[in-house]
Structure formats: C-alpha cells, structure tokens
Image 1 (cartoon, rainbow, N blue to C red):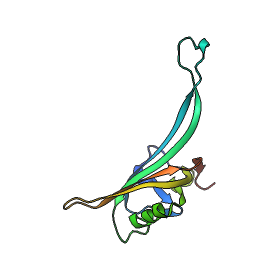
Image 2: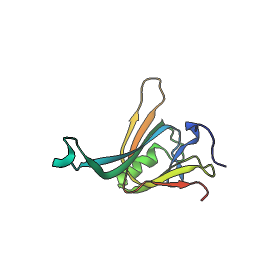
Image 3: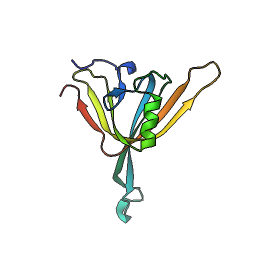
Image 4: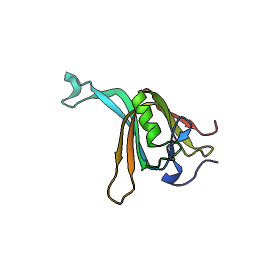
Length: 137
C-alpha cells in the first residue's frame, strides 16, 4: 500500500544499482530545465521563452564507516573508474513513486574535524532521462 500523508525523509533511500548508500544522513534530487529565448518584435517588449534542455543531479551526505556495505570507498571507485551507474531514490513501499536514471559521480568529498564524526558528501550528474516509476509495477 502506498505511503499516505507527509513522507518521512528517513524512509526515502538512495541506491547505486541495488545497493543502499550506507550511513547516509541526507540526499537531494534536483531537476532543472534551461529555457531558450524566443522573443520576437511582436512580443510587445516582453521576453518570451520556450523549454530547453532538462537535466538532473542527485547528491548526498553520510557518515564514514569502513565496514559500510556501500559507502565512501565504493563511491570513490566509481568516480575513479568514470563509470556511469544507475541511481534510484525509493522508499521501496509498494505503490510509492521512485525515481531512477543513469548518472556519473562528479564529486566526492571527505571531511573530518577534531572529535567529530567523519563525513562524506557526493554529487551525481544525470546522463539522460530521470524516470519516475511505481514500486511494485
């Protein structure tokens, strides 16, 4: 049964292939569209626009753990290999929408402060369409 009410962010996970990104604390999915100018002399002095290229990116943060099943080390290997991977953001709850697409890992960063948890952040750039699908269909 699909999730009802306001979605709890803890339930929405980011996957690389079938692997959950381990110890993630947050993620962001951004979808944008550039516009193209279509202003003419008959536009009455107003700019006119048409849709242009669409793009998407997915980014996130997490805690470093060397025993994570899919964490910093695995993500770094993806970047070094310049390999496109399938990204999925899903609750895995039957009936919910999930988003998936092919992406390249464009950046990864590790941060450590005195007596603080070591964290990492990453950013994927989509390489084609982002497809919404329903879990269980």
